Image (cartoon, rainbow, N blue to C red; front, side, top):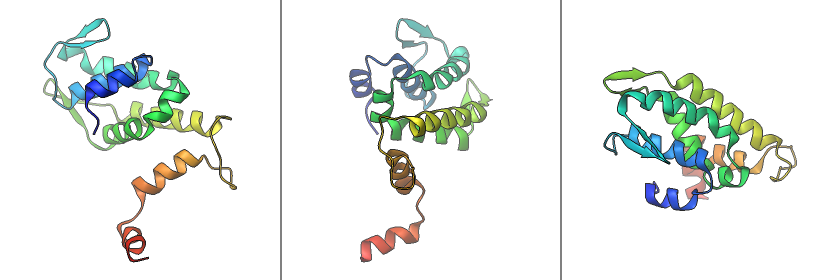
Length: 146
């Protein structure tokens, strides 16, 4: 995992990603409240609302920056879908918004004319991500033995 300081350095021009990564960092319990997000201070009781807004705004990210951090963005979104998060002692319901954001991000990447597609019309970046993240363990053994 990349340190938050590195992510801030690289995505300083992309406020949507910076906000999302900063709030996820706080959600993982690695920050003290209130946290500073850009020019704002976010207390713990507003974290869920701010995180929902940041998830929704991911689809507004610049394509170049989204591509650079795609694996981190999708990993965090899938984690939000699969693992209920606890914020201020309450279970946060982020799965639906995270799922919708995955759909939006995948759709924008798939429809992009700037990104390469394979001979079957699939986005190469998304196909590579899916291959490495969702392959079955037996597939890994076949690659090692080959």
